[in-house]
Image (cartoon, rainbow, N blue to C red; front, side, top):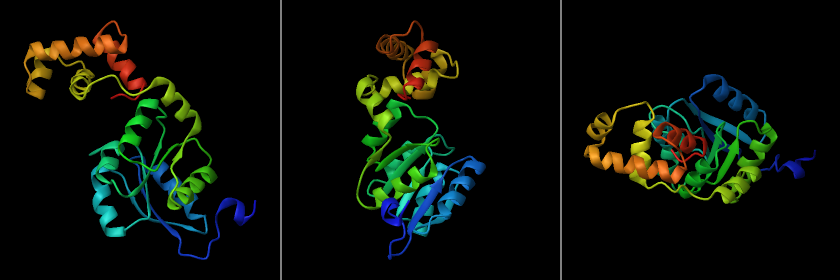
Amino acid sequence: MSQEETGAGGSGPPIRVLIADDQDLVRGGLAALLGLEDDIEVVAEVGRGDQVAEAVRLHRPDVVLLDIEMPGLSGLEVAERLRGERVIIVTTFGRPGYLNRALDAGVAGFVVKDAPVAELAGAVRRVMGGERVIDSKLAVSALTLGPSPLTQREGEVLRAAADGSTVHDIATRLFLTEGTVRNYLSSAITKTGARNRAEAVRVAEQRGWL
């Protein structure tokens, strides 16, 4: 494939990329593969979401690649804090709800990790050129499924219930009354079409609503 077809080989400076992923092998692999591209330079790697903002400040990347599930802050939370930056979510979790939340956070791209590295490199170039790049299959699923039906509070309560915490524990943790927690759980169960809160958590997680 020619340089014109790939978009590589431009005469300008390389595209500076920061990679944030909590898995060392994945992060290192992405850095090594992208580093083989003539027009891309990986300038920083971090393993925690709460390290990204400082790394962006220090290294001034053109494009930031974020995993979703990271310690400290999730990739979605980081993306919300990096509004104005060129951010691409690169994740194993190709869930429609995650895509909707990422778009709400203003990300420029959403790519799943099993995509070929040439596709990821192409996404970096296209985002650098001002485009928004979204995995096509996931986009169709997201449109079909629609946005999360859960309110912010319902999501918080359901997330708190994911570890099997009692209503009392959830109420204490979120500074709510036990009655309020029960109401939120009941509403979340109804909206997810589940039979109980454990199933509601599972459905919401599978769809990327939590």
